[in-house]
Amino acid sequence: MASEVLAKPQMRGLLARRLRIHMVGAFLVSLGVAALYKFAVAEPRKKAYADFYKNYSPEKDFEEMKKAGIFRSIK
Amino acid sequence: MLSRAAWSLMLRKGGRGRREMHSPEAPARGEGKMPPYANWYAQRSYPMPEEPFCTELSAEQQALKEKEKGSWTQLSHAEKVALYRLQYHQTFAEMNRRSNEWKTVMGCVFFFCGFTALLIWWQRVYVYPPKPITLTDEWKAQQLQRMLDMKVNPVHGLASHWDYEKKEWKK
Image 1 (spheres, rainbow over the protein chains, first blue to last red):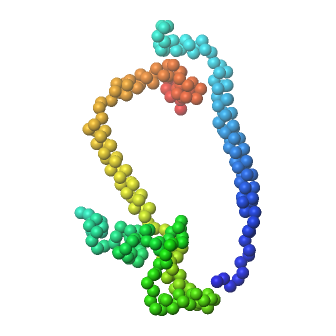
Image 2: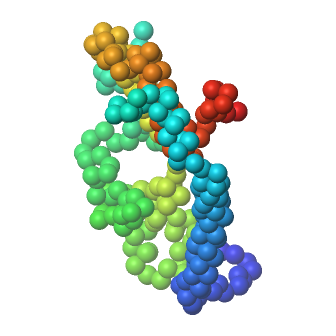
Image 3: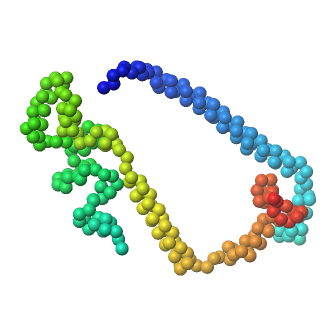
């Protein structure tokens, strides 16, 4: 029905091309997600724990809890 | 109270049938099998029906069918379209057209969600027993105070948000 001739579309290698693109893409996406997790979640968490325990004194903590009266064996 | 269309739908008198509520199309046949159980019915997942759409052919249509047995290059465009229309009920474009059914579906879903909410509200007022003592505000406040005294989750959790010097929540 068309009066002009259309260009012949790509007939072969379609799956191979799709696999190539998605293989690269999947690799990059998983690398990206892993990097994002490391720097947005894992590192801040490690730092928060390190900061908490830098000046932590268990004896002081214990005295505070005892004063608050939560223990049943020690008054 | 009920609109006339809904009432006539329920009583199955006149008016538009349930199947025609959402899209304008030619009135369906009343007798015999209805689609999708008719043999000429096709859909995108079942595109080649068992039987042609028109089985009773007028003399002119039969002559066209005879002509179809010859070379198809001798058929004019209008004849090809006529043959298509004899064989198939709808074109792919017509068969796959969208409809407004989703609006009715969503409307009914939301309506029944709202009705359910009313039922649950009634249940909350008339059926539920009084709250246990552990859910009263005084008990919950004492429980929270005890958790802060114990310093639960002091790194990231509850106690990390409490300022122990000023005795208030951290900003």
